[in-house]
Length: 434
Image (cartoon, rainbow, N blue to C red; front, top):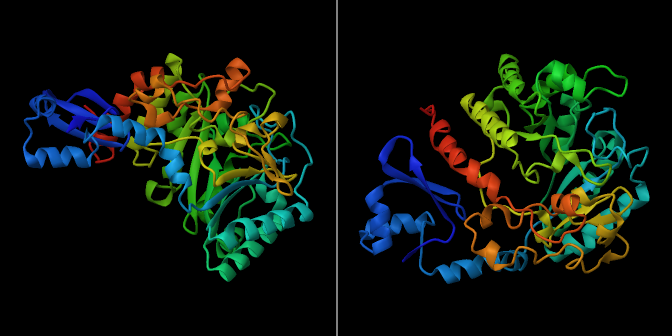
């Protein structure tokens, strides 16, 4: 047995005689005495110790085989009958005027028509359900609920088709939260709604300055009220976007949630991310989580601070885990309001990143999206590979004008991953970090 290529070793704050071992490929962590690591390197482990560390991904039978398994991971996954997952952009209109809006340059009264919706329904029926695929849709905008009749039409028809083919259908909703009442939530749940994603950008004064209604009035109270009305009927996930000037005020939002009985057991994931620069180009801000690469010192500090404050109050927030852009998955696609297709929501608005249409199908995008960009010795030998697989192609293009290399996360992960793993071990078990 050999130590995994994808292993990080950290000192344990609790004891200088212990180490924290973390498998980036399994997302598993364990504290062990220092001599256990020495024994692992020298082949002196007991059978029980070897079995335990192998189960956690700390030890592997063959590091060359482990490397090749990661190199071909998406080939293996794409050969399986995975659910068809699509982000469906119903419109590019909104009733909020967010100051950092990524879609501002191409936003307007652009709505999916009934004809386009029927093409979408037909595509899913013949190309997905009839071929044995389950279907999961994420409805998005603009503000998706401004297209409620079309949303109802799509969900109803696909739900009926799924039943005929004996497949499963469900959908999620990305919404600013101002229009989702308890009654509407219950109606949509009967159609297949599984979860909703709301956004609150900090306490009221901060949020209202960043996400006002188009009239200029604040939206915080309306969103907070609607969250409270629906969180017992459907899973509610919460996001928020912070800046260098206001991130330290976000714990005030967490305390307000608790004061309004929006306690951790009533909410799903809570995740805060930095406001990305508005470049006047493509991109959907609600999906930047996981794309932002906070290598600047203040961003590293902010991400760790907010994660700690979130966990201290008992809210759930994502763990580091094996992850990759939806570009890597054949079964994932973005369907724009006009029927054009993309492999990532951040590329909507860039014509050269379009991969086809509902009517014409999908063309080869391996070159335009540089599909093998991370399949280099440098990446494959990096212990962080399972956490990024080359990072975000969108951010790479913003920086260099082309997807001509990876969006490396090493600087951030070197600075933050040890603290993140330690936070999870201590705070999720109800113990505070000393």
